[in-house]
Length: 100
Image (cartoon, rainbow, N blue to C red; front, side, top):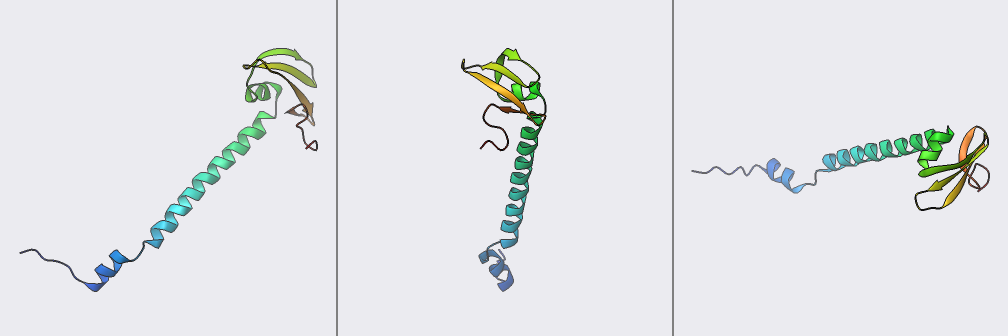
């Protein structure tokens, strides 16, 4: 003989949405997204610290010219870009802080 549990608490539990699980999933997803954003901010800030890092960050494949304050490089597409030093950080020419 098969026993069927018809307890009202059991039936109510099945019918109710699992809001606690939904909230937990939202919190976990929020943490994952927050970690990803923090990593991206860190990687971008780190890229600006030295010419070599910014050169690699921008995807340069050939160094054309470099001084203490600027550098020209060629991208894989063939486009030439200029990297400039502003307040001890490296930026794309025309894209530094306070220039926007």
